[in-house]
Image (cartoon, rainbow, N blue to C red):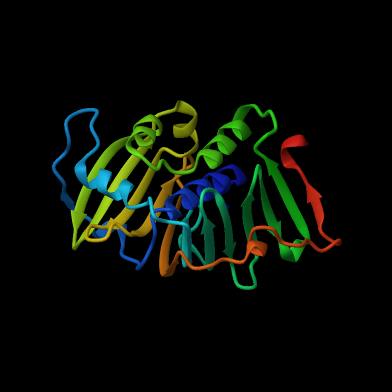
Length: 243
């Protein structure tokens, strides 16, 4: 399985990219025609337009299909679920039928809930951390850049191509710690409305996590209990970073 560190990194980039919206499910591999590149150090116009399209998002939810490919398995692992997002940084991500895994971001912490195991893992953004945990939580707290300055600061554009009204943007983290965790991120969005179609994360161990979105709901009310669930007293709460 993908390591917890990679799992949290995947959540970080998934949630950040949710603010870019989603609709249908094309394949990133359909994208093939190169888009003219911008001068060195400048963001291509199509990427600027895509970033600008985020500004009116208050809430967003959608079905998600997650596909994880591992070198040790001949067939990828596939799961379905649902995601909810509320600006600026609250989210709930459920994967698996009857929600086998639930990840919730609220205020200055994140909860990863395993209902079948009656177990909750709590990660605090305010705690002083070092090493891999620091890198992972920094990525999760920052999310995906929402403007040109943040994009340039966090990522280097290593590829941009389009086909069938879909644009694929390939990114590489600028920080060495980020590249050790996740060497590459690919994002597919439609050219006519700049809605997110899919993300694909490549991890250092060669595994990949692909997320495809469907049935989006934009700026619809989301019950606050989605992000503040009442936990059964039977649940055991642990804090992995303090162990």
